[in-house]
Length: 281
Image 1 (cartoon, helix red, strand yellow):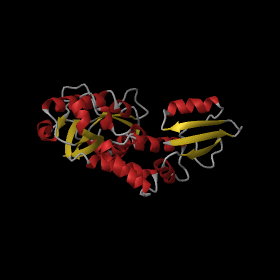
Image 2: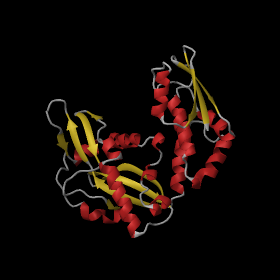
Image 3: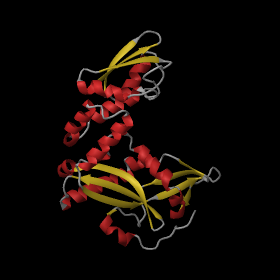
Image 4: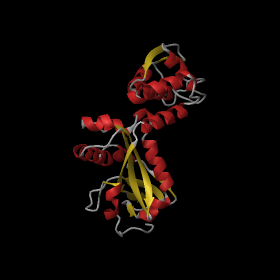
């Protein structure tokens, strides 16, 4: 879709097809003496390498127009990835928009791909789960468990943190929930976020589907979401510190306690009985 020619200041060059595995590209650049990562190599006026982007199709050529000063080689790879992996249901409209220069920036392109993907999934299914927060205040030897009041006070930061974890180069999380063929065909999008409810901050997973799931598909989807909360997306997120006035906050979408749940919106009320930890710490 997009071809990148990277030339070092020493004069050695490398041509690479995008999208690609960013780690393989990084390794290849290091072998030719470029120590900067693709995420830090600017498309224009970089002090370590010169980057030239070309394309052999109209779509690719139009995509080159979305880049601006400050964009990097990794950004070019992400744009190529986002378009090449777009769902078939939106591909025709997406390509027409690209050809008609509807995307002046990569951010607008990413947002529209997300919006169009969700729009072709008119059936919305939302799951909820409790959040667990632990604070590293820099003084105690062990992390401090924090209550719902503390998490709610930092809702914006937590919401931004889990959004940052779902970066465009990963694609939509829905593509990772594909163990059941029926779910894979119906599920267009899955997004992890948070929601405050009666003073308690909950994890929320919004799924957009083309049509309702069967009971078997529902069970499989719920099981796969649970796996992402505990070992996939959630595991990565809980290792990312969130800066607070009291120290580094770590938030998990899963815990091993008896009070843990992952339920639909219709089932949520039975899990929202009065609970401990409504206060600050």
